[in-house]
Each structure stands twice: as C-alpha cells, then as structure tokens.
Image (cartoon, rainbow, N blue to C red; front, side):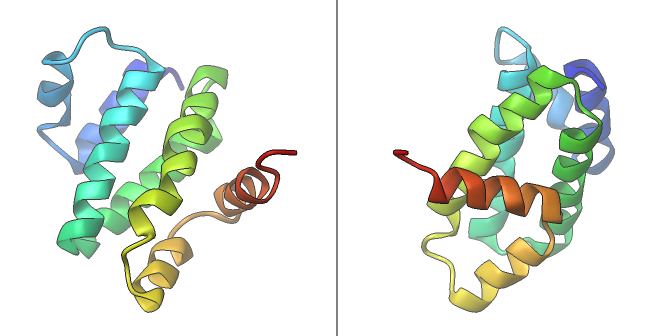
Length: 118
C-alpha cells in the first residue's frame, strides 16, 4: 500500500479526509499520516470512541500493509505522538485506547518509548 491507497482506506471511515488533504501540500506518506494522527488526536479529546476505534484499526492496517515510507511515517508520527495525546486521559480511557491498537504497534510503541536516548 502506498500513501494514495492509504488515503482511500482512511476516506472509508472519514469521508471528508481526502478534501482535508487537498488543502495541504505536498501530499506524501508523512503528510497523510500527520493529518490522520491529528484527526485521531481530536477524536481522543472529544471522546468520539466509535470512529476512534475504527481509525486505530485503520492505522494498524496501514502499518501492516503499507510500504516502507508509510511504516516509517506511522512510527515517526503516530507512535511518537501517542504518549503526548493520551497523557491527559484517565488511566481507564488510555487502556481502552491501547487495547484497540495491534500488538505489533504496541511493541513498536514500547520499543520507541523505552529505548529513547539509548
């Protein structure tokens, strides 16, 4: 999967996503994942669980099926940002969020968090 296919995947659950991207230039794997991460952050803050959980599953699919650029973007943007936008959630809500992230992404998150500075 490349970034344009990822946009199509995301548009299945967030219909206006493609329009939102056309306002930002240039379009590449990093800009797509950055914008999708911003939307997920907004869903977490608004407690919009239904679309949030579908979005987290979609992020997993993009990471699993994506090309190297998408995988790097997910690791460098989404995973790196997780701590930041779940920091103010209740412990219970944070656990619920992480329970909807694949084991592979959770391992990537743990590796990134615990290997920081090594």
